Length: 221
Image (cartoon, rainbow, N blue to C red):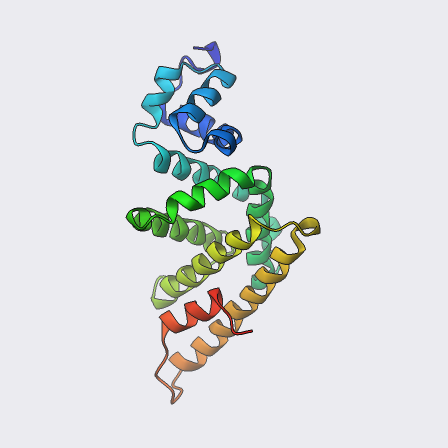
């Protein structure tokens, strides 16, 4: 094993491997073959790399998405986000994630196929929630009540839907994806205003979270 990695813990190696894995997962899927290729390219012993991801594909994808969370925060420091309106903060954070994912869209497509398996629904939900939570916290959200959950549920739904557009977007600089995202974020802002009115004593108490999320994912034409 390369001297650079001799003293690393498995957790530290996980971070290193996760950032390079997508380059090989694009060709070999999220498999042991891809992991071996990444390990060899970096100079990490293949057997040690196998110990880093004993649970296979889902663990690799989880680690990759965690690296995207971290890189997004590095690219969007709090002092820069603080100068933006909340809508602009969320847009900036999501678009930064897209830029980080852009070189690995085939790996993302393969990850989506795995996460779409009903058996992996719990993991997919957890990863989507985590991404939304990281973004809202970076945007300055400190809610701990009902708002904490609704904001993350809605942004998670919007982000997941945006990624489905993104992996097949051949427009210049992802113009179609950006337009889709802008419409969905408009939906989030409208919801926040409507929610404030609804929770503030309005007469219509028949709000449905499921119906609203469905409209964000599949808006009426």
